[in-house]
Length: 128
Image (cartoon, rainbow, N blue to C red; front, side):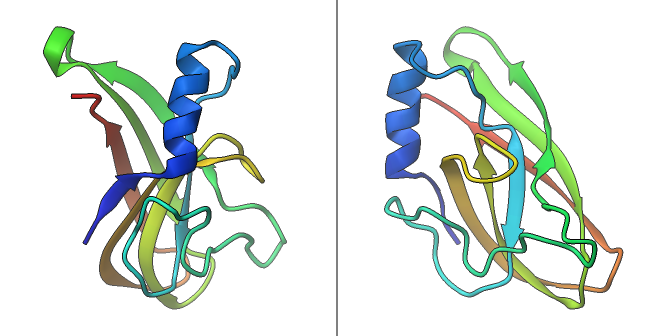
């Protein structure tokens, strides 16, 4: 299993420090495909983009700063609800509900899901 700040995510961090972007990576999405998260990724593995009502499934998370000084971290927490029966295998933090930049991508153990099952993701960026 791997969790990475993507190459596009690294550029996003520089743009954020330079104040050329005003967004946060506060939208969490998930996928159903196999793979290991890598820095060159620009999308999830087989992303779950819509439900039966054709609604985008990236969930706006709650962002916060945890810690201070050397322990300061950026964190986003979101709960996603499965629209289908499948195995969820990866997730990421995006700068928008559609489109946007995949800043963080992580893969995880395949989790079997029924319609309506939920996973709460906590994605943390530690600049250390």
